[in-house]
Amino acid sequence: PTNKGDTTRKEAKRRKRRKMSSGALFLRRSLMVAPATLAFVQFEGSSVTKLEGTEDAVSSAKAKIVSVMESSLEKNGDGSSIGPTLVRLAWHSAGTYSKKDGSGGSEGGRMKYDPEKSWGANAGLAEARAVMEGIAEETGLTRADAYTLAGAVAIEEMGGPAIPWRRGRSDAKDGSSSPPDGRLPDADKGTLKGTVTHLRAIFHRMGFNDRDIVALSGAHALGRCHENASGYWGPWTYAETTFSNEYFRLLLEATWTIKTTHKGKPWTGPDQFETPDGAIMMLPSDMALLWDKDFRAVVEEYAKDEDKFFKDFASAFSKLLELGTTLAKPPPSKGWLSKLGF
Image 1 (cartoon, rainbow, N blue to C red):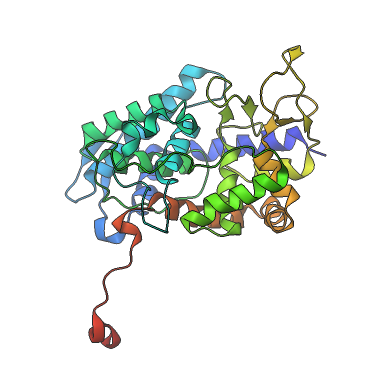
Image 2: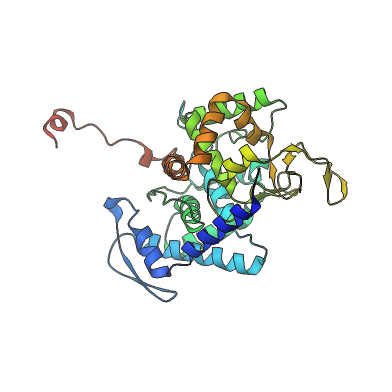
C-alpha cells in the first residue's frame, strides 16, 4: 500500500539537496550548456557577475527563473510554486510538432499570440508566459528560447535531472505559422483503449516511442490540475514541487477509484480517479499507462529505478524542447571529407 510517510521523507531529502548554495548549484548547471556555447558566471550572494562568453544571457535567465520559483513558493505558502507551470509552458510550446511536415514545435515562441494562446490546452499559462517574456526581454534571450529554458531549469531546481538545453530559437512576429489546434494530448478519449490509441498518435507524430511516452508522462510528478483551467482537480503526488519517480510508484500502489464527491458535494467535473483520502488524483490518460501492457512494463521499471527514469526523462525532454528547430537537425554532410574524420 502507499506509504505517505515514505513520500514525506523523500521530499525532505530532496528539499535538503536543493538548498545547496546557489553558487555551487548554478556552476553545475552552467556546464550542461552545449560546449559550443559554454560560458561561466560568478555568483556573489544573489547577484550575478557576468564574465566574458556567449552564455551570459542564459546564466542570467537561469538565475531569474530560480528566483521567480523561490518567490512563488514563499508567497503561496502551501507547498506549491510556479515551477510545475513553467514545465508545462515548455512542454506545450514544443509539443505541437509533426515530423510529417516539420510544422509546430518550439521555434517561434508562437504561444504569445492567437491562436495558440487561446487554445483550451494552454489555459492557465498566461502568467508563466508573461514571466518568461519579461525574463527574455531583460536578458536578451529570444522568447522561444526562454519558454523552453524555463522547463529545463524548473525540472532540475525541483530535484530532477539536469536537462541538456541549447539556445538558438527565433521568435515569430505573429501566430500565422501556428499549427492547427488538437496536437497536444487530451486527458480522456472516452475509453481506456481510445485514450491509449490517442497517446500513441500524439507522441508518435512527434517522433517518440512508447518508452518516451511513459518517461514524459512522469512529469505528472509535478503540479496539479485546476478546475478553472482543465476542469480536473488536484495534484498527482503528495509532493507537487518535487520531481521524482513517485508518480509511477503511486500509480501502481495506491487504490484508485472514480471521484464522486468534492469538498462534501457531488463531483460534477470530468471523470478522474482519486485515492481514498481524496488528496491526490490521476487522469484517465494516467490510468491508461496501467491498462496497456507495454506502457505498464515501463511504469513498473521506473517505479523501481528512479535513476533510469531520470536518465530517460532527461533525454526525451531535451529532445522535446528542440522539436521544430534547426537545433534538432544533424549538421549537413561533409561528403567524402567525413570519411577522413573531418
